[in-house]
Amino acid sequence: MGKTLIELKNLTKSYSGNRVVDNITLSIRENEFMTLLGPSGCGKTTTLRMIGGFEDPDSGSILFEGHDLLPVPPYKRNINTVFQRYALFPHMNVFENIAFGLRIKKIGKSEIAERVAKMLRLVDLDDFGKRNVDSLSGGQQQRVAIARALVNQPKVLLLDEPLGALDLKLRKEMQIELLDMQRSVGITFIYVTHDQEEALTMSDTVVVMNQGVIQQVGTPVDIYNEPINRFVADFIGESNIMEAVMPEDRVVVFDETTFSCVDTGFAPGEEVDVVIRPEDIRITVDPADGQLQGTVTSVVFKGVHYEMLIETKHREYLVQRTMMFPEGSRVGMNIQPADIQVMKKGDR
Amino acid sequence: MRLLAWPYVGWMAVFVVVPLLLVLVYSFTSGDIHDVSTWQFTADNFARFNEPTYLKVMGDSFVLATASTSICLLLGYPVAMIIARADIRYRNLLLMFFLVPMWMNFLLRTYAWMSLLSPNGLINRGLQALGLPILEIMPGPWAVLLGMVYNFLPFMVLPIYTVLSKIEKPLLEASSDLGANKFLTFWKVIFPLSIPGVVSGITMVFMPAVSTFVISSLLGGSKTLLIGDVIEQQFTYERNWHFGSSLSIILMIIILLSMAVMSRIDRKPAEGGRAV
Image (cartoon, rainbow over all chains, first blue to last red; front, side):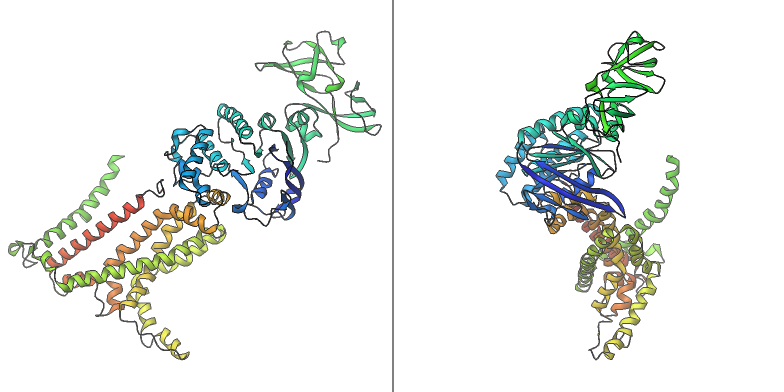
């Protein structure tokens, strides 16, 4: 992956006194697939719109290849956007929608025809040029919107929840198609979504946001395995989160039980949060073999695994195993040191 | 549900179809209007229209109606745009400014212009006080034009405002995102999408303007005779309902033809797509 392309520095934006984006600093590299992930209202779309030029930040700066981007109006930015509801021009057919940007740039007719045809091929809509945009399905409109943006050969493509309006199956297909496209055209994608699975599937880098603040930046694997705080752990995937104490390095105590772990660098006796993924809890048939003991209170078949709730003296644990333990059975639970993720108590 | 349509059908039959047929019958006959036994079938009424006086009146009516429609479009489009772009809180207030005068009687408003424009009316007294030459446009075609624009402007603003306010903001952002500055966004996105409003605005202004007789008889005097005035005269002073009817029929046909042309423009595909 290449050099830094876009830098956001201390970006802040408020709407009527409400801080939507709060002092964000982030750098985006060339050819990176970066996803801004967070619940609705976390500021991800506002951040994207500031990069696109549709909102001005109250303070902070945006650098594009080292130059200040803020004075540049949206129509002069080498950035294109795929809008949430596609925003295709209803008075133009598919061809004209895609050709719009090229016509503005006064590119020759034959070159326009060539480039649009190439884009139609890329998004798999070869014979759709003359079709009316409102005769297309959601997925097709989506692809026209992507083609309309990509035909301008932007350095950066901004995508604002582009798959939000599609049904699950189509969404999964489009995720893979989008990834293929990004790799084949080799441009930077900045993708906004609230769907954590989508973020993990597609991105090189995930930026988790909450209440206008970046919580964690990392690869999907990092974000999943080493969430930095309770919010990230809770938002990404399913998890068991509990309050614990670290009497010393590599030792953590919760539910009146002492576990060894791999985390260091906390003050002796510091109160922390601990996250354990449901698939990392192993069940023993003999309760005495487990570090924790409990009773299975519910079993749900999920296809690949069974999802069980196991009640201990202190709490209910969510556990995913391929082997089923019947409701009411008394079992033990073990957790490997590497599967315990210790997090600083979040101020947020 | 179909039963519910009958009152409407009955209404249309009694108050639209029958009168139209009557006008048609009058236009193709001559004789004493009170005595049907004297009526004879004839096409002379239509032939009489071919006289220079009537052709000129029809021509003048068209010129004035076209001029007033054009001015209404040039004035009304920007106004509609300003209202449609205004903050939603002020939109209704701005619209009210345009609509409140319409609540007043049409005749009253035109009389008001009469007194404003008269040689010693408010406007001219103001001009005199400032030492400026006075305006002597009333009675005359300019006063008629002014009266038409004033009275019919809301009919242009409203339909255009309606289509403009329905254009979704992301479309404008998309246009800007794809490299179009404000002018190009207007020319390539906003204007083509507003054509249906423009067409209905033009229709709603042109039709009453071409057939009006109140404005022209109040503000135009005897110098500015429009086709509406001639028809009115035929029915009232001349008591020649036959000729009046044939003039009405001719006017109606011309209006229908111009509407047909307009609706073609409406449906004309804009740059390979189609107008919505």
